Structures are given as C-alpha cells and as structure tokens.
Length: 119
Image (cartoon, rainbow, N blue to C red; front, side):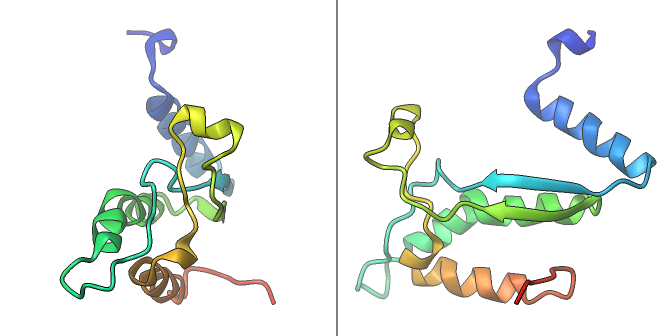
C-alpha cells in the first residue's frame, strides 16, 4: 500500500520518525480529551469516573509522549466544547480541573523533569 492509503496515525508516526532522524523538535498544539467527555467525580467514594477517563485518554497520551521523545511540547485545550459548533463532532468537556482524580494525576505527571513550565 502506498502513502495514499495511510491513516492519519500512520502519517503522524512517519512525520515523528522523520523529525527524530533529523534531530528536529515537534510541538503538538490544541490537544484535548474531547472524546472522553470529562465529568466531575461523584461524591460517592466508590465512584471514580476520573480513573476511567484517565485510562481512556490521558494515560495513552502520556505514554505516546514517552515513546516519542522528539515531541518537546504540547498545548492542552482545557475547555468545555458542549454547546459549541464542535459538539456536533462529538466533542465534550475536556476541562481537567472539573475532575479531582484527573487534576491530581495531571499535576503529578507534569512534575516529571521531562516537562518544562513557563512562569
């Protein structure tokens, strides 16, 4: 199969491989867990929807970054897409601050020395 039949993922991997070979950094812009449809965790301590959301989107995202060290930065779009024109695409709420489990894991994960933060 030629490049004409490559998926978006396959094209992205090819691009990342090229960047790595040439020693070029990659920046991901406007990433968000729009398909996770984040919700606040229930007051019930046995219900932790944030863990399922983390496992669905955030865990794989950070694993992908780890597998591709040529990715040097990213911009996360922490916003609610419900009620916007993007909702018709199935996008939901991607605000990390509405879910305590996700927010705690987010802060913990970004403390890794790999990540640089602006002041």
